[in-house]
Amino acid sequence: IQRIREVVDKCKFRTIPEITASRVQAHIADVKRRGLSIGSCNHYLRSMKMLTRWLVRDRRTRDDPLLHLSTMNAETDRRRVRRPLSQAEFGKLLNAAETGPTLQKLPGPDRAVLYILGAYTGYRRNELGSIRRHSFDFKRTPPTLTVEAGYSKHRRRDVVPMKRELAKRIQKWLKQSGSGWADDAPLLDVRGKRTADMIRADLKRAGIPYEDELGRVVDFHALRMTFITNLSLAGVSPQAAQRLARHSDINLTMKTYTQLGVDSQASAVESLPALPPSAKKNGAPQGRSGASRENGGRGAE
Image (cartoon, helix red, strand yellow):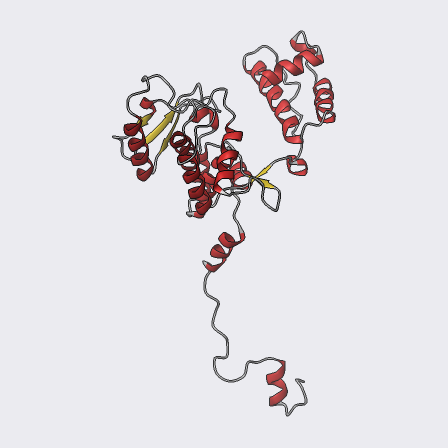
C-alpha cells in the first residue's frame, strides 16, 4: 500500500484512466536512479500491477494498463545475498542466544525460541510475531502451528506441521515461562524491534561471521532460507518444499532459497548409481598402451 501510494502521488494519478504504463515506468526508473536495487524496483511494479489487476476484477476498468509490463532480472543487481546456516552454526547461535543478555527487551531464551521457530517452520518475522498460545495445537498429530490470514504474507490462514521434537521444546519453554502471557498476547512480540540487529549480536557472540568470504550474509530472513535448504538436504520433493515454504512459484523455492554447498553437492553426487564394471576385468585394458604391446610395439593399425 505504501508503494502504491508513492507511485500514485509521484505520478499525480487522480483518476483510473490516468494510470499509464509509461508514467509508472518513468517513476520506477527514477527510483532506480536514486540507488534502489532492481529487486526493490520490482516490488514497486508488482504492487502497482496488483492494483490494476484488482481494478479489472472489480469492474472499475475494462483493461489493465500495466498488463504487458514485466519485472527486471534482480539477479544482475543483488545487493544482499543470504546464506543458510549449517547445523553446527545454528547450534552455536542458539547457545549464544540462550546464555546471552536481554536484547531489545527480549530475553535470551525467548530469542532462542524465535530463531528455532524461524528455522523449523519457515515463518517470516511478522508471522512469528503474531503467534499466541492458541496458535499451537499440541494435541493434534502431527502438532501444528497456525498463523492467521491477517498476519500471513499471502493473506491466507497458514497451518504448518511441527517436528515433534520442536513441539516438545516449545511446550517446555511455555511451562518454564509461566503464565505471564494473556491468551491473546503475542508470545514473541517483535513489533518495533530490529531483529536484524538482534541476530547479528547473537552471531557475534557465537563467533559466526555475519558476512562470509563470498559476501553472503546471515540476517533474520536467513532462518527461512535455512528451513527450506534443510528440506532439500533431507530429500523432500520440490513440490512438498514449495507447499511448506508457502510459495506461489516453485522457482522461488528452488532458486532463491535453496543453496547447497559443495559438501552437500558431493553427497548428492555420491548417491548416483555405481559405475558399470570395466569391459575387460583381467589383463591390460584395451587402450593405446595395450594395443602397442599386442602389436609388438608398432602401435595400433
